[in-house]
Image 1 (cartoon, rainbow, N blue to C red):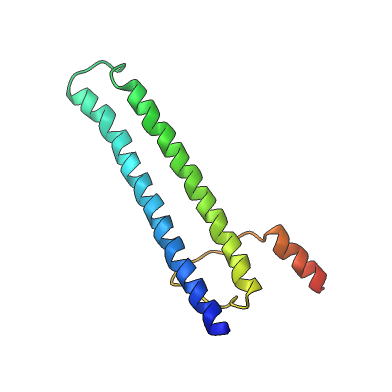
Image 2: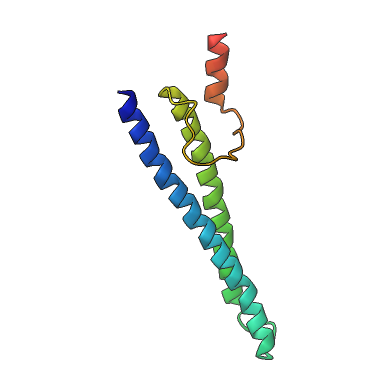
Length: 115
């Protein structure tokens, strides 16, 4: 039973890390696009109004990517709670510099009930 839980947790951790990496890479690419667009406009000698709507859309996409990253970080923290709930609290799934997540309300109340 423990082996099955560990395998399941490893599978979820692998996909979670891949998803986090993909969102981070999307942020890197969007930031590059956001920097390239005004530079290209200047190099072409175009007015500042040229491409402004397109740049606004890129910036909106960047805000959405930041929100997606924030949600993944929250999911990662919630999965840390699940890890403890299924008896795998001491396992590390490949990240060595992982900071502590703020204690969730669920964990907080569980600790109070235990006391």
